[in-house]
Length: 330
Image (cartoon, rainbow, N blue to C red; front, side, top):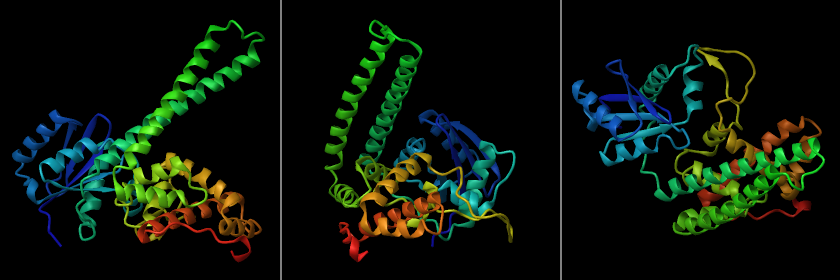
């Protein structure tokens, strides 16, 4: 195990980075971009922080950290990315949250867990591009949903829509978005076929009943093709499917619950997958029917989501496609 001379915690936002050095108890706030990275290097030089013997820890943000990650990689600086829920669960909840405190807590967590933390590998450029496409697709889908809701309201409020210019504009926007989404999906299909391992994992996920096209792509994107989470449970915590204990010191209060810090976008997609799996996946259908006699629907649905995550990670690790069991054999 390598001993790091310095541990830096980085709280990442769209425009700025808050950086805390645990050993020196110092902090700096910089712009999240090339100019800020130059300031960061000067700061390290001023305080004699040797970046060759430094571990930089930051949270997964869904993309805002990529510029800094690329900078670290280009300068051969060791870094790791951590699930925010793991940090919160380990250190507990504090009041008066701010970016400076968050950076300090990330540094503290990385220092305490230094024996278990391994330097991250460079992110596959295809993964970065895939997530950009998926993010833009999501924006278009939401925009169209907003137009459709407004059209529905206008239909109720106004009798005649034949010469309504707003209706025409919104209908045209919806059609334009549909065409753009189709082009994006075609580009995504071409993109994932470039990387053989990525494409194989995509096909494995699609073999699971309940896991649709977008769900499979998002899972690959956010797990970075199953390289950024050590196991299925850690991903399930990140998604907000597996609950954790709210603890402080040696005491644990209250019941287990999932966190509001979970990735709601992934959780929502997995929610739809679980509903489909209960209908079309024989063994999960039998499981749900049995458990619904004992537990509320939401609890059973959450259990199915966790089972799907376990199944995805297990099949990908073995390189096997899913084969559904006959219903009478489940």
